[in-house]
View (cartoon, rainbow, N blue to C red):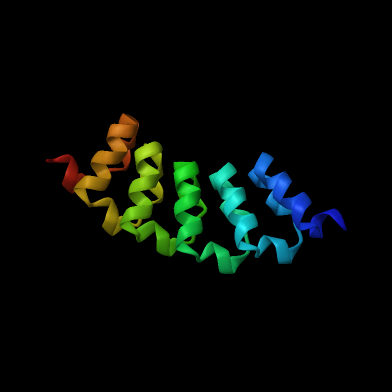
Length: 131
């Protein structure tokens, strides 16, 4: 348990494997630098950072920039944040299925998703498919 609370060890671990943050102490899971390092290494590690940091827009943006698939794990408010969503679908078109329904109707978002992965077309609302 001493290792889980040692900031230097945890930072080194999450720099190597973002998912290592899930084994960190609660205090270090709430440490901004630890969280950003973890999600920079593996965006999906955002699901293991402390709730207060999961609500942080910079953490969410860093996560989806690292992996568009991380959109699945960001708090719901960021699934309706246009910038966060665009970052995610540009690298992983299938992230469109996790986007807030209203924003899924945004032509730029849908186009970015389909450009990234044509199979994301299945998640494009019918109203846009007609265009």
